[in-house]
Amino acid sequence: MNSILQILKDLSQNPIFIIPILVAIITQGIKGLIRSLQEKKFLWRAFFEWGGMPSSHSALVVSLSLIIGIKEGFNSTLYILSMFFAGIVIADAIGVRLAIEEQAKVINKIIQKELKDPELKEIYLKESTGHTPIEAITGGIIGLILARVIYYTFFVK
Image (cartoon, rainbow, N blue to C red; front, side, top):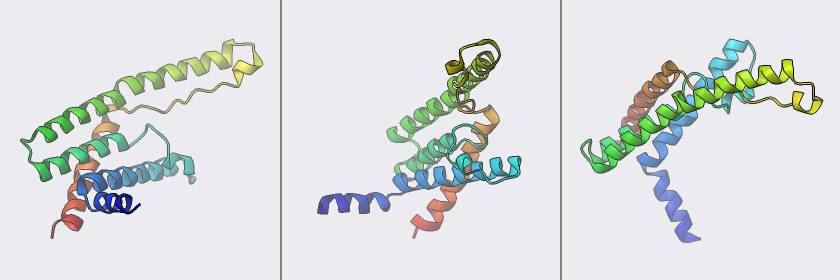
């Protein structure tokens, strides 16, 4: 039990662990506020949804890469690996997940208009799962800014 507490203490003091988590939570909060303002009512679910402006996934992986670069060096193998990881996550959010979103919209329309089976009419596929390029880029910029501010405010003595 003592070693688990030590691991948690060590992780809580490691900027490579803590900062991306904080960045993702803050970015998700920004997304929830934006959606609530757009709908002109407070939407709890908007704080937990995938897709939309800004991309918290992009913010997380960009902040992770930046902090690894600052701590380990921008020429380190770990930093380069994190950059490839970030690129894959962002490309997935823009490409694959956005394509799934578009397909879900079409399938939902077909189900509602064409199918006669009442059980199938109750099916509704989630339509907000991906990101447009601007949502992903905005998330990345937020990740860069927040990671830098948090790191130099709380972790540099």
